Length: 352
Image (cartoon, rainbow, N blue to C red; front, side, top):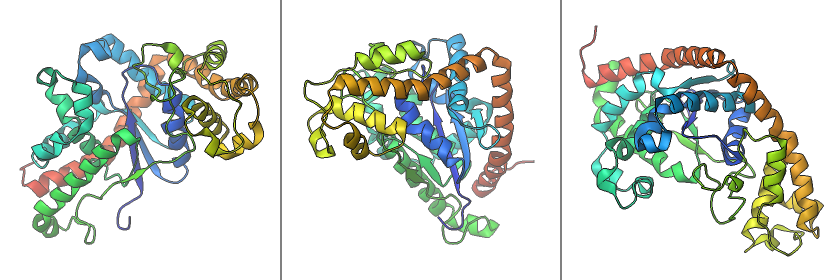
């Protein structure tokens, strides 16, 4: 994307403990991207309150969850010196730009957002305006920093498309003013068109109890997921109890078709070891699940136990985490504030 500085923005909600799916689907990629991009990683606490008290449990629970997610970022290898780590509510530009974008986005665009329909369920009339408007705030999160790349899962791709639509409409609506102020970047306008990054051998981790469902924080069974706070014994027990089928592992990927649980466990092993599924099957093809699970336990404990230990160490000193988030917020605002000032100039707001 010529003309714009290569910058990554991403974030996770502090609604409950992060799990293996968050680690393999996002955090490992975030860590790798620190070496190639300027990275801004946010704890999106303003998004967390859109579904109400029953989801995030109240102010004290939310405070603890923000710190826990920040600790997970750091324990997984996100370096606060290389990347910016902060919580969204400390930078007021997110809310300010979201309001501007509310006047750019169109109801028809938001009405097409499938995630709102899924989260609101049948009782849409009782859903918060914030839940409906969530994608506009997400667009502000990204464009407030003129991020060019966004690591996203399949469930967020539609929201990123909306972000691009909002950026394009803003650029078009104010093209003359942007040119007048000399704020455009070549022929690309003021805001970049952020591109999705979907990468990694195990980007979609499924439930340990049902290989057809995504591993989720909201699943009633704790045995459906491996939490990043789980100790070695809990990790081992959950993998041993993970659902499988009676057939041995195949020797090639085609043999995983129609075997959701087998494919999931092979994918987890591939993600944790950093190799392709085919390579895992070349090593374990023909093996019974008992032997494969034993190897997966050893690998998972080796990779994940240090993260849980580091999280416990960090969470024992909440003031240290708060200091990291505060410093990150200052660095984030130093990028965001000039962009927001320019947006206000483009619109024609009077400011001192």
